[in-house]
Image 1 (tube, one colour):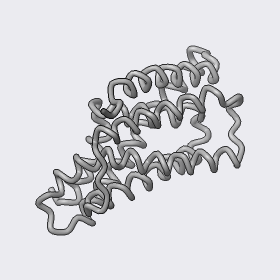
Image 2 (cartoon, rainbow, N blue to C red):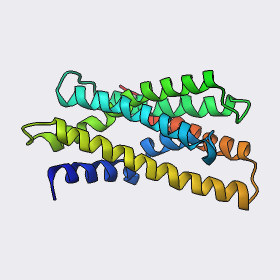
Image 3 (cartoon, helix red, strand yellow):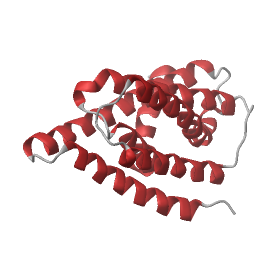
Image 4 (cartoon, helix red, strand yellow):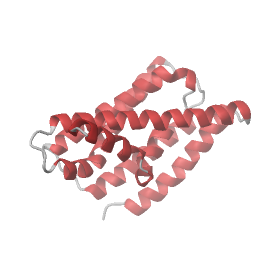
Length: 194
């Protein structure tokens, strides 16, 4: 297995690992207001999130930024809370161009925070690498592919719940966002920096 394949696989397995449920929960909450027919918008949204965490992964891997992991874990929980609240307050499933731009910008910014959460793991992997660019690139592609797998599974479940079980899409969004809100509050309390 080549180095590129190894880091690609590590990126996929890292984002899909249930132990990183906070990143998965954020991703699901971020996509909760969308329908499968809006897949292009979701793809751009996920890519904006990836660009954000790719940036901070690079900066942290080069030791240009170093923020305490406990503070980052707190901030990650805060990103879930904010996203859940926005979803609940959003009156309509229709997303205007202006709102979409705000969502892209927010995903990019929150990606910066989540990238710092990935950075300690990646830095431990990159310790023996002489050149970090190729492994970092492969890892980020793996993260992106893993996120797409998660979102695809989520949309299949959403389709089943809204079409076959006939649950109103808005109720589904509120239910998922409500669960995310509760979990994020618990995480905020348990991760509050000392």
